[in-house]
Every structure is written in structure tokens, then in C-alpha cells.
Image (cartoon, rainbow, N blue to C red):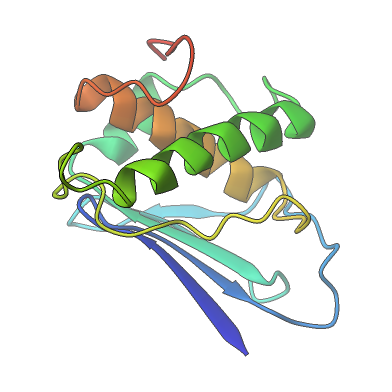
Length: 145
């Protein structure tokens, strides 16, 4: 069974494939590949989650502005992502109040699922990039990097 989660508008996709081992954690040496259309993709056949981010400028921002991997703890990233995703989903449900071109679809980020460090790192950094690039404030202080 596959569960698909999309953040379209800027098109950010997490594909969570349910398997028997939901407690695997992504390693920080998972390869990141940038395609011609500025796609960041984390994929590993031994893991059950994949993140694909397609947004002009994100891979450059990630390489030049984001703090390095392992700067934040996994629990910090999970907590911040839960707050950001909750607010994101609230905005998707209010298209009359928030730009529906930015918030097109909900994100199915479930706190009881262990997505691993790399997936959480990319989601967190995308949320920071999104807030700074599109002048949005999802929750609390928005770091500039």
C-alpha cells in the first residue's frame, strides 16, 4: 500500500510506502541528486520513504544557506516539522484566506512514523526556504537560513 503526500504549488512530494519495518531511520549519507529542473531527491531502496522537492532555487539554497546535516537533532526537526506541517495544512483548508497557489494540497506528516533524519532535514529546510522565499510565516521565528 502506498501513501502519497504532496505539497504542490511549489511541488514537494513525500512518498511513504508502508512496509513491515516502519522504524528504519535514514542515514545521513543518503545521496542527494539535483536534476536539470532543480529537483532534490532522496531515494534509497532499503528505506521506505522518499522525498522529491521540485522548486526553482531550493537545491541552490540548500547547498549555500542551510545549516549542515546533523546541526539539528532529529527530535528538533520532527517537532518543528510537526508545527510547520500542521499550519501548512490549516492554510490549505482556508483557500479564501491564504493563497491557494502556494498551499494547494495537505501534507500527510504523521508524528508516530519514523521518517529518519534525512527526510526530516529536507522537510524542515524546505519549510524554512518556503517561508523566506514567499514571505510566509508558518509559526514562530523564521530563521534566515
